[in-house]
Length: 394
Length: 187
Image (cartoon, rainbow over all chains, first blue to last red; front, side, top):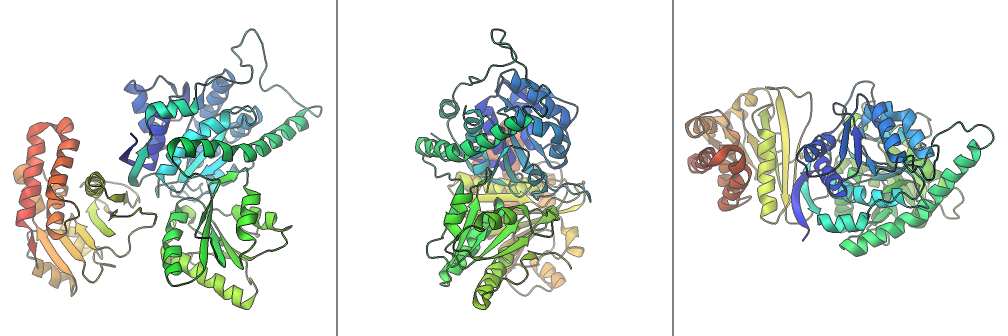
């Protein structure tokens, strides 16, 4: 039987890693690393997994070791956060372009500077164009499930892309909640035994080279294949989620639509803030206000059609970004959503809100104010200033 | 939903207490959340932690602003921190202090709710031999609000402590919890 265990989001992900029992985990063992690797390395020390754990001297080396290990045909994982991800940067792109199915939990925290260790999405949003699949979890339970799902998604022959499993730093990573852990054996059955579907470095019968020079003649074709893999991922991830849902009685989806029936205005936000927004939606619905919420759980590839279907009938939408892109045109989630709506016949009025940078708290009242503003722009039939900030001193 | 805010100093076990009561409630079939407010962490610095306990899934992920109960593990914080900020009308302020509830009430000019005090540091010294007031404070909390039953709390103490610290110290913790429950004054 699945059992409910009190775990932080970090510990929940470490439990998923224990059940996955990857061949290799290469990780940087100190700050900015999180409790995920601390807990997992304890599992290694206690003999609960057979994993070869490689404590490396930097995050750059962590991803480099993962690339070598995955190319050699080992099921490979690491975990990182904030500036750790930033230091991996160069190799993060290489992992994706070499089509290595590495799974990496990311605890979303602000990038320095100024120096800050708290939650925002600037770390993984910076890596959004690196060719990795990105999932964003609302709570520890989902971070646990996404980690298991990510193994199956990454390793599919029609995808073969690395996956980041993101959750909100401190807010869920350090918060204890009841997490339903699936049975070890059922998780093992779901992720299946790893059989690399491409020739690997250690396959002497079919010798191959990974990562050679690739100039004007073929680089472009390889990039084009990466885009194709992302298209395949968009088609296939829902199927993997369906199988997960059927097997474990869950209801994962690439986007969550919360109380969208008959909604006139909606908020789009990812990760833990969506949970806070649900409380507000419940309260406003009780007052008879037609409000709803949309939460993309998958961000790369971008669930464009699902978003169009969900919001094109609305009168106004606010997109909440926990990252700043300094484009003067809004945050990354807002930009994607506004872009995909361009060709839609029906378009809601749209506002962007940047919030929560460096761990600035966001409260139900702040979200209620956003809904209030949405009704106001519906009355005026004009969006006014489209880029706004929540909870910042001006 | 019951929301609790804990005030302590780094190293006094406020975080452990906030999680401990939540885990006990989870064992009793409730939905829970327990999280600290992380700042610059160092021993002795004031810290705040939060616990939520509910009959329905908890989706909110922001700090508690209007607690039902505020638990102050270190009474010296009463001088420097507004511990009653946001306390709801019929809420409870529980302080680790040898003083009577009336004295605390007057000091803070608190008109609403209930005030409870217990000398948890003394109880901890007498039962455990060390100043670790956080476990006795759990007993005192049960006295002001039955967030879980005493039986559930005690079995949670046994589950968590027996292997780690042995039977003798586990029993000492349980004694401390029971004594704090008895000795809590409410006014």
